[in-house]
Amino acid sequence: GQQLNQSPQSMFIQEGEDVSMNCTSSSIFNTWLWYKQEPGEGPVLLIALYKAGELTSNGRLTAQFGITRKDSFLNISASIPSDVGIYFCAGYTGANSKLTFGKGITLSVRP
Amino acid sequence: AAGVIQSPRHLIKEKRETATLKCYPIPRHDTVYWYQQGPGQDPQFLISFYEKMQSDKGSIPDRFSAQQFSDYHSELNMSSLELGDSALYFCASSLEAGDTQYFGPGTRLTVL
Image (cartoon, rainbow over all chains, first blue to last red):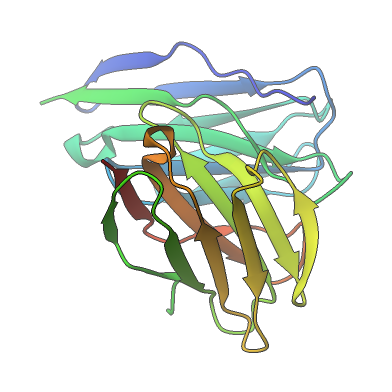
């Protein structure tokens, strides 16, 4: 089945730094979604991407839908302590309504 | 803005008992999805409903069933609970099938 690859599993950055996360697949996706999850809570939608090449911002977050439709990245600029959490990429292939998730990247921000 | 509502937020059951989880989608969203998330795992898709009909099925055990009602709320029924069923269960909703999914806060099920 389709898989989304996110690595590394954990990232540690200093407050104020920028960080970039990639999500790749061997399959073509026609929608990419980025979610943030905090412990014991539901995933919160950060950015949704619907077209190849699309670049979308949400405050300090920027995400792009790769031109090959097999990857996406999320950038967080000027990180702050509340950026701590697990960042999941997810996507639809269009074959059905199942959303495929990556394994997530746990982000830690040192004050 | 209104979000997805799930109840209960926490549930403790004994092995072999049954549990019912409820989900109220965002108003005007007609598609509901159920996910199971174990510790340190990504959400695993269980089942989805569009306009009260089952639309897709994932790794949902035969002991589990779900339905969507005329007011679009959904219930996940879990029988013969096992220790391994302990997890966070999320409901998500979208405007249409295959549209952006918005997740609820989850129900933490603990099976003792």
